[in-house]
Image 1 (cartoon, each protein chain N blue to C red):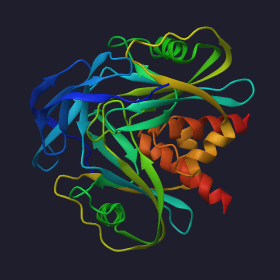
Image 2 (cartoon, rainbow over the protein chains, first blue to last red):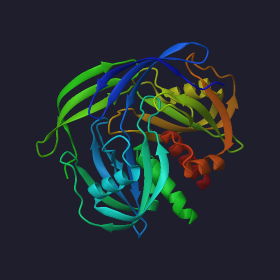
Image 3 (cartoon, chains in turn cyan, red):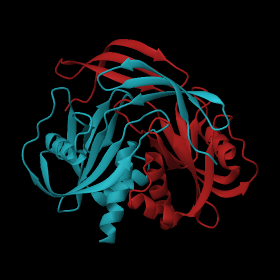
Length: 180
Length: 180
């Protein structure tokens, strides 16, 4: 089967600080036309920090878009298009938790909602942590806490962690560490 | 720490078919004001179908927003606000793969990108599958294939499946089935 869509027209609907919304008409295989409403985004990183004691560092954060306090791993937007993912991951980890890792393992990409959202999130695992001071942005409010990784896994399996990147990162880190 | 944000003003920027974009000003703890650009969405479901042989049914689909062919589990939007998640999951599974499950297990919510996206995706596992005909929508083009669940797990761990809900569902289904 052919799997492609060809852009016919593209309209920038809203050019915000974070969200860049487009409405395009596309041609599908067979010649049918359709409309795609989607968000472009600079890209982001997330990091699952694992301490030498096998604990994961998590955050509680209020998320306005879903009107809930969610449990998440540290994450953040790139500062500019094309910023090195690794550099951004180290910055966000340091800002939000104060942690500096000896080892930062690239776990590949995560697309959270590819039907309408272009946001690419690169996922990392951080190990060998030492701690300095955190430096939260003025509009960032979050509560950092630690949990044994096995407990975080159980929370994911019970459906108690609803943030997608955190579900993925907890299960992937656990599988990777169990293989060592 | 206080974890909340209070709406001061709310503006509907774009009221599309799928995407409903808002720009709100909010008050943060301490009185600072900030802006939230975010997308409201009807909600959606995703289903990981596991055959009696321990295979997972997956799809290859071109995703315009990320300009890539992604490997994903069956998924789709609710037909209307408040639609029963279970009913929607059975419909999408049937339409995309022809499968009808004897058992549909609720795995809880997945928020793919809660910083800017309100979309709630309810995740299910489907088992005891029998097969009828699929009925794809006119603008849906996807290639259905099967893989042993253990191979899908390895692909996720190698970073070869970048769709977030599929990463989560594959690892969660595998962990749940290994516990039985």
